[in-house]
Structure formats: C-alpha cells, structure tokens
Image (tube, rainbow, N blue to C red; front, side):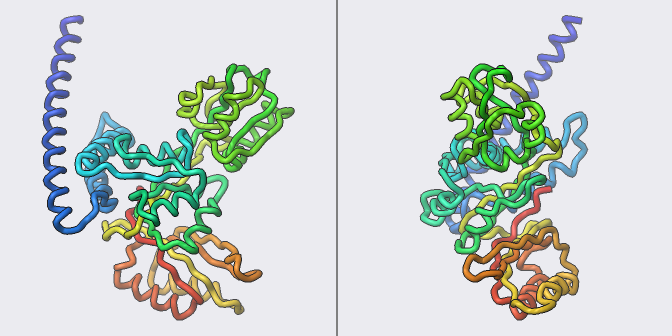
Length: 356
C-alpha cells in the first residue's frame, strides 16, 4: 500500500511540474499581450475577456472537480497573469477584512494594490481622480436589499459598471475571549446586524447592539473591549486577533451580496451581458406602466427595478434598472431611444458580463 501511495505521489509531482511550466508560459504570453494592448491604447483589465475564458472552461466536463473549484483556481491564474502585465490599484469599501475587501481580493488577486476607503463615496472619488484604476462597492444583498449609498453615488458620478460579482456571505461572532457568557455588547455594520437579527435576539437577548462603520471596524472595536463581540468575517478574526464564538450566524443561509467593479469605461459585449440604467420619470398617471411596456415591446428581460428619491424634489423618484443584453445591441438601442422619449432622464451606468 505504501508503495502505491508513493507511486501516486510521484505522478502528482510530475503533473505539478507540468502545471508550473505551463503557468510560466502563460505569464510570458500575458506580457506579450500587454505589449500589444499598450500600442492599441487598451487597458490591462477586460472583464469581457476574463468572463469568456471562465465560461469556456466551465462548459467542459470537470468531474471530479466542482465548478466552484475550477473557477477559484482559474481566477487566481488570471489574476497572476494580469499582475505580470501591470499591478492594478483597487479602491474598495474598507477597512481590511470587510466582505468588500474579500470580494476585491478574489476578483483582482493579492498581487493588486488594495486601497481601503472609509466610505463608498471615497471609493468613487479615488477612481474618478485617477488615484485608483478600479473600485469595488457593494450594491445589494439577497436578504436585506439594495445598498442605498451606492445607488446615490451613481446619480452624480460618470463612472461606469465594469463587472459584477456575487459572493456568499457567512457571518461570524468574534470576541477576545471566544466565550458567549462574557459578551455584553455586539458591534457590526447595520446590514450585517440585520442579517443576523434573529440569531442575536435568541442567543444574546440582553446584549447591547451597536452599529459600526463596517464589519472590520466592529472587529477592531471588539478587540479593544473584553466584554464586546463583533459580527464580522473569518478574515477579521485573523487580522484583529479575535476568537470565533460562533460561525454561520446569519438567519438565512442563502445569503449573497452582489458587488460592482466600477471604472471609467464600459466593457465590450461578451455575448452574455447585463445593462444597468437610471431612469427619472414624469409625474403623471401611467408613467411607470409606459416605461415597463418599452421593455416588453423589445423583449428585454428586466432583472431588477429599484426606486430611490432624487433628493432634489419631494416625491420625485429615480429608478435603478437591470436588464439582460448589451447597450450596443440594436434592439436595446431602440429601447433606450423610446425610453428617452418617455423619461425625464435616462442614464446608462454600463453594460458588463453577467456573473453566472
């Protein structure tokens, strides 16, 4: 048996050597691509091309590996190849160990320069000013809904959505001691607290609940108080030297957050795209119905519609809308033309590859 084990291990070693050799060759080709891109004036990051690679690979027979395993492996390979070309500066809603930080790391890799920001508005500003190449911000959660601050920023920003990323969210209760009996107060970001509301009420009914600027900030506060705890990520436990009191404390296990990558340009069509727009409609009977009829007329699959006050005039609303397809598609261009006739304003936030 020992002999068979050693034989199999030697075979794995040979495969690993081959994989490494191919990765080096891939890196060399990535450098050549960057030389051509530089002459053409193209950027290093193309969400369209990266999604095309992933979709092609995931369409193959992968057993015994899972789709998630293959996607995770090749995402890191793509990140490493991209960093051979240029080290990107990524602004994200921080500080370190927030779920947005984790999404940014997965999407762009540890080799990119990660720049934490205190607020979502700061992420937008850093990209607008050119101090960051791209930004990563949360846009909605599957159980708690839209992140209003992100929507508000799109109202006055010229930045475009370049990509989206959906991540499962699992919350941990962390404290200095790791003992439930010592917890008198719990810190966290408002959305994280909302996602764990029932769990906290049943296990810690007497604990004081305090809102923090982020889950990472909550972990920092908890690290300074022996009687406090934080609802945060497992990464926060490592960074802030906290112990896990309980894992997976979210009330609903199907808990996902959608993140957006924002930049100055919208990517080219990939064949499986989504478009996001902002609409401001006229204050008259049937106005919203007229807008929805446009989507039906051109056969557009409306995947999201969210209303927000404009904050300019009482009872005046903007609608954040997602639908499938790319803004360059002829039937979508016709739909946008019709919408512009019916709406006060139509603002295209970007077309980008669907994350599925």
